[in-house]
Image: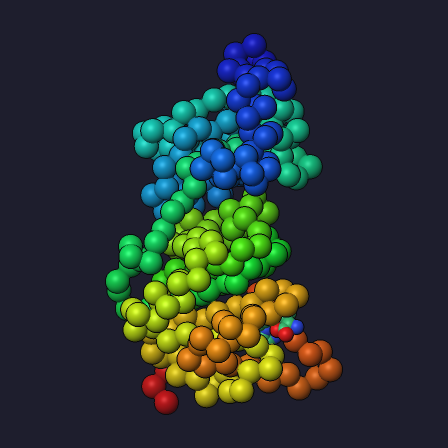
Amino acid sequence: MAELDLDISSHRNPLIRRIRGLARRDSREAEGVILVEGLRAVISAIEGNHPIETIVYAPDRLRSPLAQSTLTQAEKQGAKLITTSAEILDALSERDASQGAIAIMPRPQATLANIPQKGTPLLVVLYEPQDPGNVGTIARTSDSAGATALVVFGSRGVDVFDPRAIRASMGSLFSLPVIEAGNSPNILTSIQKQGIKLVATSDKGDSNIWDIPLRLPTAIIMGNERAGLPAEILSACDYIARIPLIGKADSLNVASAAAIFIFEAVRQRYTSD
Ligand code: SAM
C-alpha cells in the first residue's frame, strides 16, 4: 500500500499521541483501557471474547492469512481498523521493531462473583507483585494448569496489564479471568466464604508443600518479590506452605515458586494416591 493510502502518516496524529500516552499506567487507568501489542496477543484477546476498541496496524507487516483473518474477525466484533506505517508503529513499540499491530482494549474486569463455576476452584493470588514479567509468567503458568482465575491485590503492585506483563503472558492474561482487587482487605475473606482454602506461600512456612491438601478448592497466595507476605495475611490463611530448599539459596523467584505450587495442585488433582 502506498504511504498516501494509509489512514495515519504522521507521528503527531492524535490517535498516535493517545497510544504514546497510554504507555503510562496513569493514562491507561484514567481511560479504563489497556494496550495490546502484536498479532498473537490480539488473537488471544479475540479468542477470550474481549472487545477491542481500535487496532492500528501496518499493512505491509500483516500480510499472512492468519493476520488477515484476525483483522476481519476483530472488525466483525466492532474493532475500528486504522492503517499506518511500520515506521510509526516501530516508534510506538516497546520493542525495537513492532509486530505490526497495536490494539486499544477496554480493561478486562472479572470479579469473584463471575468466575467460572466448573471443576474444583484453583485461584492464584498475587500480593503486590512488582515485576510485570513475573505477573505475565505466572498468568501463563496458571492458564496452562487450567486455573480458575488470577487475583491480584494490595496497594503497591505493578499494573497487571502492563504491556510487559501481557507480552510475558503470551496471551494468557486474556485466557483466564483476572480479578483486580486493589487494596480491598476483604478479598481473602470473600474467597474463604466461597469455601476455598487459603494457602499462603513462604520459604519460612510451617508445612511442606506436599503435605497441603491441594485437591480441595484452593487459593495459592504468592508474596511480593522482596517482602513476601505480611504477617496479617499469613495469619489469615489456612496454611502456610513452603517448598523445602536444600541448597544455599534462601528463597525462590516468585514465578518459579508459583509454578511449583500450581503444578503440585495439578499433580494432586490428577493422581489418585
Ligand atoms: N524474603 C521474602 C520472604 O520473607 O518471603 C522472600 C520473598 S520471595 C523472593 C517471593 C515469594 O515467592 C514469596 O512471598 C513466596 O510467595 C514465594 N516463595 C519463594 N520461595 C519460596 C519457598 N521456598 N517456599 C514457598 N514460597 C516461596
